[in-house]
Image 1: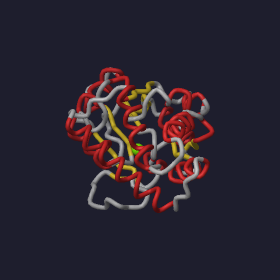
Image 2: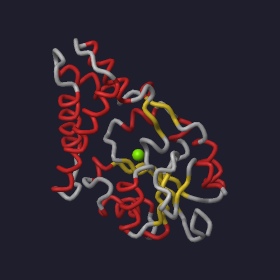
Image 3: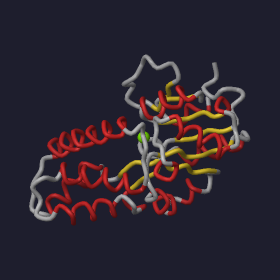
Image 4: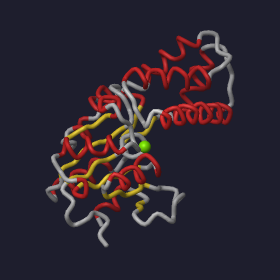
Length: 230
Ligand SMILES: [Mg+2]
């Protein structure tokens, strides 16, 4: 079976971990910020604190059926930063520094094969979009990558929709924006629950980007974006 369903009219991509990657890595940036505010943390310690804080926020989102907003995203990142960097001299300044950092194009890199793959998909007549659980900071980031932004017909951001992935309302908004039926959209992302399971449960087709082959049991799976062209 082809990886792109024959009746697909649109392909929407997740942003972070699929088309965009923090560079340097988030734990490295957090550790550097901590150091500037008087706290030495080993990268492994940053990562484990971050993951624990992140999970608490995920559980909070389950309780609200994946509701989100710009205010909710600021609250999320405020709590994740202050929990991860407990012990710094000025937690509020750390939060502001990190929040602002990830709004900068210079904090990100685009997947090396993204522009080539998107161009090839566009030449097949497919509508292309981005469907992200990020917030309004995605706009200035995309502004720094015209080779990516120019190939996207639509960008859907959960904080503006009011529902985040994996909530079904997010995927329904994608189809509304794309003016497609659910089964005419293929969603491509690196997160099993948010992207693959969420899109599939909503009635879309989905492909999991799984570069380390962590989820070999998933039927529709690629290890790099170029496989979409096969
Ligand atoms: Mg992702």
